[in-house]
Amino acid sequence: MTRFFFRHFDRTAIGFITTLLFIAIVVPFLNLEVPESSLFHIPTYLVSLWGKYLAYALLALALDLVWGYCGILSLGHGAFFALGGYAMGMNLMRQIGARGVYADPVLPDFMVFLNWKELPVTWYFFDHFGYALLMIVLVPSAIAFVFGWFAFRSRVTGVYLSIITQSLTYALLLAFFRNDMGFGGNNGLTDFKDILGFPVQAASTRAALFALTALFLALGFLLARAMVVSRFGQILASIRDAESRTRFLGYRVEHYKVMVFVVSAAMAGIAGALYVPQVGIINPSEFSPSNSIEAVIWVAVGGRGTLIGAAIGAVLVNFAKTWLTGTFPELWLYGLGALFILVTLFLPKGIVGSLSARVQRIKGSGAA
Amino acid sequence: MSVDLTDSILYVDAVSVSFDGFKALNDLSFVVGRGELRAIIGPNGAGKTTMMDIVTGKTRPDKGMVVFDGSIDLTTRDESTIASLGIGRKFQKPTVFEGQTVEDNLLLAVEGPRSAWSSLFGWRSGVSVDQVLEALSIIRLGDLKHRLAGSLSHGQKQWLEIGMLLAQNPKLLLVDEPVAGMTDAETEETARLLTSIAGDHAVVVVEHDMSFVRALQCKVTCLHEGSVLAEGSIDAVSANDRVIDVYLGR
Image (tube, rainbow over the protein chains, first blue to last red):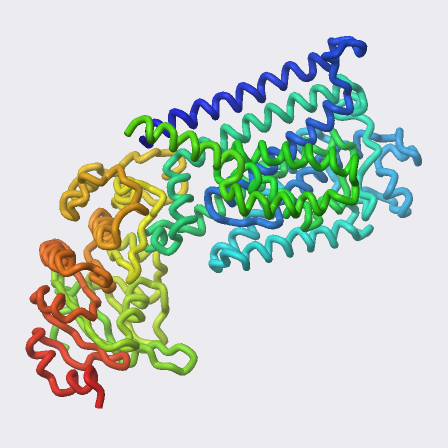
């Protein structure tokens, strides 16, 4: 029966990856090659909008890896997403060069406005794209490592851990709001011109970013899935279900937790880096605790501990958000709250979790 | 004490620990020999579970010494280190990985590399399947090996947890109230199981059920208020006036 289940699940996994690769090719094609008059043409704003959804899906995937498989309910994953986004934003700011309002060849506009004379050390080397890429992964991972090392070694679990993850993102929110932190204060980073020399506003750049986001979502899924089906993933599940049993069997629970937390933070950072050029701005509000909580809702709606469900949940909830905030702006928060309550009551395993349970039941009764 | 240190698998010497002024263990000393089966009895609050917490590294003693295998001081080590040194512990409430199969539960317990890296890059490599099969036959759950552990009966979960301890191949097993909630037949079976394990492994059983303790036919240590009240055969201990006082109340 287990083998049946895995075979079934593998097929779903292959389907998911195929779908992502398919839209990575077809959506840019329909956007760039099909004339605007055609029914099949996809306008650029939609490409970027869906690119944003896919970046959120990668964040949800990262969150599901720690929450669904290891029971670590992080209410601060938005922090890693935002840090990756800032690292990308800093590179984009430096690529503006002398084309800013104040035409300073080195300093971004907000620094000139604050009357700063030289570039802060934190901004050094961000003009190199490779360095920015490194920081996109390194900064969230390093913060996750230090945070995880102390929290998991001290055996902070459950609601206490959730609360301190929330404090982490809130502390970063307050820090990034400050002008003297040197990250643009409450305005954040914006007015981007180029990415790697390509104009960010151009339809072709947007299409390429969309395709890249879909690819990274597929890669992130592959990595997360490889981890959860390995013995490592089996031990993560053991930690989630009976932490002290695992520890008394001789496993170093804190090492496992730190490792999965760091991988997840790096994935969230990459998601943030893909998000920023597509929305064109990053500011401290990305650190706000409500963003992280929303990400938890996406995972719960799609199905905790299913990976695919997390990604689907992120896309569905954000699609609903775009639609509702467009038509009935005042209703969105009620809608989100109602969604969370309804899913908890009627679909405790989320959309994908409930579906796969049903498929399993049908297969089980067929085999018996 | 005249017992030779090198002959003992566990040597607990003058251990005291208090929680918020309450002395859970008070100068507790006892010795368990290699391969010995030992029952520990005592009224509620006598310090039985605290003693296990000290030995397995969950709690640090305020003073005293716990020596394992003749030379290793356990009081400075944590749970996972102590487990890898060869001490297995069964909890009072049966604790197994309910979402995984009986076989997978045992595979997780089998001795072998435990680090996160080894688990990430070596799927079940270096883990002996023979030990899983052996444990399955000892605990008689071979027919149920593909069942989810969560679907087992209470008694079967207790056995599975003992099987996981066996798969660990420890030198010392600490078993906390193994027959709580078991039927008479299951209790008898568990006594037989633990007696057969002893010899290859030292086994320390904490239990309330006197007929079960009698069936173990081993040396009994009675704890009271954190120290040893009496030690000897079950008949000698249960005839001891102080033991009778403690159990029946004054």
